[in-house]
Structure formats: structure tokens, C-alpha cells
Image (cartoon, rainbow, N blue to C red; front, side):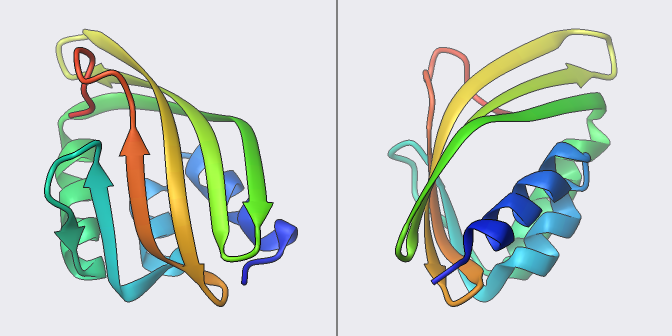
Length: 120
């Protein structure tokens, strides 16, 4: 079960822009991420590679946690992301991340957002 301090630490790393580093440091080796109802991506190495591929296509990513709730092994975070691609086009994503933690690491995460404005 994560402490509030551990979740806040994770949020701080994401807000700092170290998205791939956050996955490396805060996810279990067998972690999964799922976009809405899509099939989950599985395995921390795969998740990090996917994140790096997104970052490579962006000139800037702004990340802000609006609120978060910690209840036992379950965490919910309301995120706002603004992704600026290499052409200057900005995509704003208003997302809820539902996480399940094992100890002090995330092992399952599912993102909910308007599919008409999907993440990259």
C-alpha cells in the first residue's frame, strides 16, 4: 500500500517532465497500462519504450495533477496534459488515471479520457 508521501513523490516526478523515469522508478516489472477500453500494454520495459517514443515526437509536455485520492492499494489521479508536437500543434488531455499498487509500486494502471481527444 503506497503512502500519501510516495504518491505525491510520484506525481512530482511526472509533473517535472520525467515521464519515462517515473515508469522506471515507480512501476513493477510486470506492470500494465491501459488506455480506456484498449488492450493493456504489459511489462515495465515495454511501457518505458512506449513512453520514450511519445516523448521523441513532442517538443514539450506539460503535466499537472489536479487532485489525487489514495485509498489502500488504489490511487486515482486527475491529470491535465498538454502535449506540443514537433510542428507546434497542442493536444490537451483531461484524464483520470486509476492505479493499483503493490507495496510502493504501481502494477496496474488504466486511463480514462475522451476518446475524441486521445493521447498520442
